[in-house]
Length: 90
Image 1 (cartoon, rainbow, N blue to C red):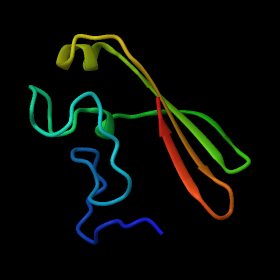
Image 2 (image 1 turned 120 degrees about the horizontal axis):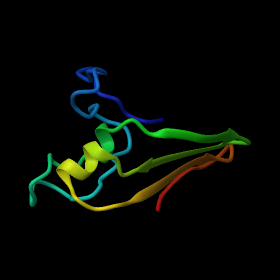
Image 3 (image 1 turned 90 degrees about the horizontal axis):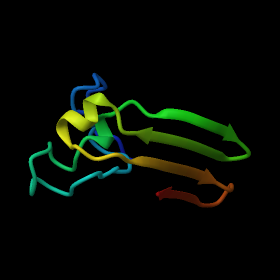
Image 4 (image 1 turned 180 degrees about the horizontal axis):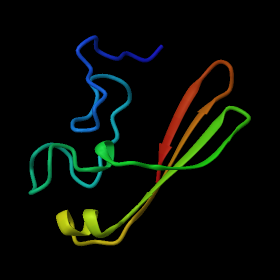
């Protein structure tokens, strides 16, 4: 079971309260970006769905480079085998 706060707002402005945090490219407020970076507020591409696996990706764009001037490509896999949920961010 994943927790999502009853106070969660799904408007795309702020990250939802609860769930599994995705932190990139910084942790906390120790840099110029929003707390924990921009990845958790970004629109990801759905690359694959099937057999208990979902693959998502996020790459740099004009908008991300305006905030953080670096190229990147993230791959996020969420897998469920009937007993265990695993996540992997590369």
